[in-house]
Length: 309
Ligand SMILES: Nc1ncnc2c1ncn2[C@@H]1O[C@H](COP(=O)(O)OP(=O)(O)OP(=O)(O)O)[C@@H](O)[C@H]1O
Ligand SMILES: [Mg+2]
Image (cartoon, rainbow, N blue to C red; front, top):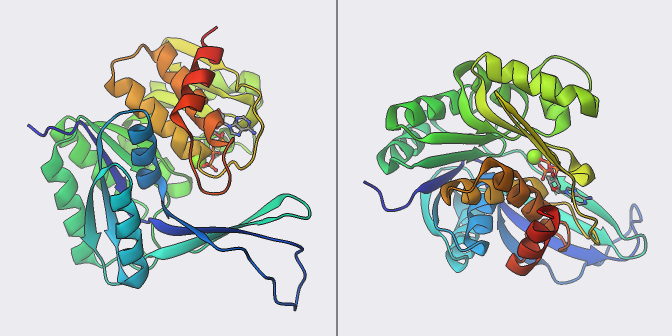
């Protein structure tokens, strides 16, 4: 058996670049402060979050070109085990810039480059060989990668008896609930799309989630509600945890931090009540930090105690 219980998968990682500037003016050169580089992308962020909480995971991700090389260096500096799958196209970049005049944050993202069929095979083979207890598939899919890619991941999870945790959106998420996952973490907008409505009121969330659970789409659904917190729904449980009031700096990585907290708490055999508390604590703690930085362990611990009162 594999010694690492948690494997995260990031097919479309990003080299995150963040900076500050003063005044957004078109046609003029905008001088930016020295950039900060971080390894980004759903699964990589989840692995980083798990590491902050003292847990261990293996981050499997694609890496291509010069940007991929920098990404690999950054991943190595994080305290996580990792396996980079080489791909032909360059790893995408993402850019976050804060205007110091207004304190507004601008987020630029690129779609990921094409992934070849042989590369898809290499990714799936790697995942299959790991035989994780928890397999976390997180983030968007690269352009050209078919929306049923995560279904293939789900089939591997079933075969390996891995508990599959998925955080994605759109068609990739709809396809996942056709086949079934252990846990999905849509935000309320993503949940609405899943059940085919434009939006959902707070008092409709439980019913919508239970509908998906009843048809075998997932065993556990955590619906995140941004500054309002999150709810955890199972066949016979509904638990709402309001988010603590924090001095918000940036919401980048809040969703990934939440998934990290949830996965770590599950792997530590915490009760589902505590699992959702850790999720909210880590998500909210992430908003206390600038740009692409995630959360500090002491903030997550303090917020966990606060939401447990
Ligand atoms: N403004 C905020 N104040 C406090 N906590 C927040 C705030 N925004 C997000 N959070 C915390 O982070 C969690 C996840 O946030 P959110 O619901 O925005 O996820 P998301 O839409 O998946 O985000 P992402 O853009 O990272 O994918 C929330 O449940 C909450 O605990
Ligand atoms: Mg999200």
